[in-house]
Amino acid sequence: TFIDTANAPIFGIDAKGLVNEWNNKAAEITGFSKDQVLNRNLVEDFISPDYRVSVSQVLTNALKGRGTANFEFPLFTVDKRRVEVLLNATPRKDISGQVVGVIGVGQDITDRKQVEVEKTRVAEELQNFIDTANAPIFGIDANGLVNEWNNKAAEITGFSKEEVLGKDLVEVYITDEYRSSVKEVLDNALQGHETANFEFPLFTKNQRRVEVLLNATTRRDESGKAVGVIGVGQDITERKQVESEKFRVAQELQAFIDSANAPIFGIDAKGRINEWNNKAAEITNFSSMEVLGRELVKDFITEEYRETVKEVLDNALRGLEASNFEFPLYTKDQRRVEVLLNATTRRDVSGRVVGVLGVGQDITERKRVEIEMTRIARELQTFIDTANAPIFGIDANGLVNEWNNKSAEITGYSKAEVLGKNLVE
Image (cartoon, rainbow, N blue to C red; front, side, top):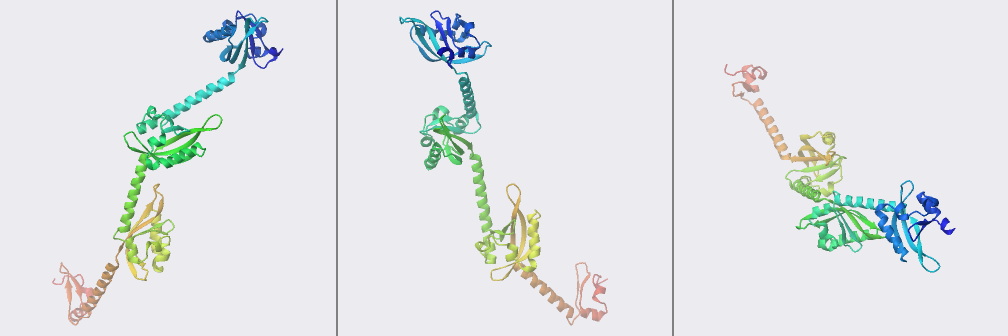
């Protein structure tokens, strides 16, 4: 009764290998009833050809008194479905102690085997993904020794998988200056504290520096215990070189702006000063610290010019640049400085307008000269017009272009009548 009602498949064979025991569970799992299998050869009739030799060996050993535990083999059901069985084969003895057969207590491990097969498939798929990924991937065990090194890591560094497996990643492949920080990241990951976007250099076999952006992820066993770290990287060497070049150009541009022999200022999209070079500071006596963050138009342009200057800057913020625009700036001591301005739109890397850069020219002296020349010209004209002697002038073609009051008085011809006429003709 125990055998018949047991929740595990149990079968028995006699000394000739013929079935003499077949419980309910064995019948349920295989679809063969007890009546269908009794006195039939277990191995020949119910085991597939590729397993007959090994199953026969186990049963033969048991018939010789040597039992076997945890032997795996497949049974095929009445509808040809494969059932995986984990078997303990035990000798069956009569009252005299003579072996008369074998009793097999099994366990249906079909589902478990399917899970194992799926796990193996997933593991192989994952390993294939790791090996062929277009990013460097490495792994270390709990002792920091390399146990994973994919094709991309080998390609980038020049070190093959065979050369690095079992080596200490930090001690062998990380330079002194970065060992401490890289070790900290990996140790943290081994404690379950993962890190994303950590930058560090790896050195290749030929001592070329490769910049890597790393995500360090904890690797765990089935019980959840941390057993290592998997690092998925990105080769950012070229990006870092571009960033370095951009930084160098930006520094060079800033140095040019700061040291330029022309006043240069910048405003952001809200009209607040974010650039004020040395020349601008020299001309106005306002240092960059005093003006940065303040509104250019409101705080440094006189009321009469605020509207026109604001219009020029607003246009530049819309992409409509201006050149040779004149306006006055007032210095710290309220001295007026005349500026000739080119207002250029400033854009970010996406092309979005973020401000205006103004490159100016101090034309104060030039304006003074122009005013003085205008004054002298007017004074000379007055002298000519009011002179007590007739004065006339002609151009290169002999046409009258000057005719003072005395000339008009003497000749009776007004200035309007003679201007542009040929004097001689």
